[in-house]
Image 1 (cartoon, rainbow, N blue to C red):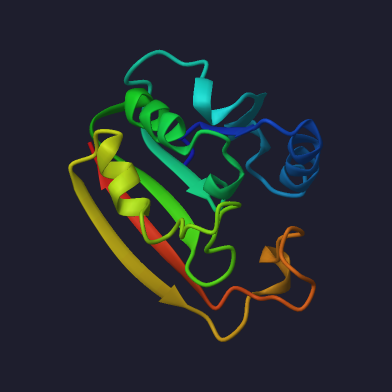
Image 2: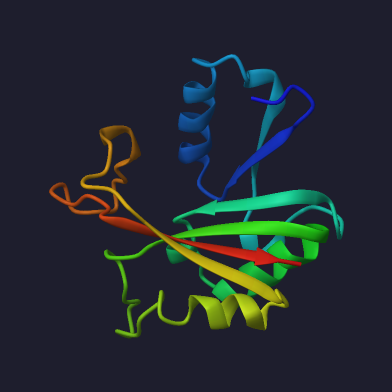
Length: 151
């Protein structure tokens, strides 16, 4: 919504990139966004390239979460922010049965972030446009945990 801002949309899944491009075409912002096919574990950008990095419930899909957080830290400019949004209710366990959300602050701190703020946002139900296909059809996100790490 700010004309001077350029956004990069990134996903390892080419199908998701195609869907994102189609959705963007319905807006007035298509000239401000470029899309790349890449993995968070190996970001194709120089150190200190970005003012902000936002991850919307994607951390659950990363094969190497600590490496992904380290890469986010690496590409952030000094005194800039990463907003890592995680689901506070669903998908709280990985394949080993360990809680992901419980340790998310520790993970982000291990990547180098010093100032970490956690906010819990609750909705009565998730708006249809924000439902994710990896959740059960009857699921809705009751809350999101917003983890803000400052470099």
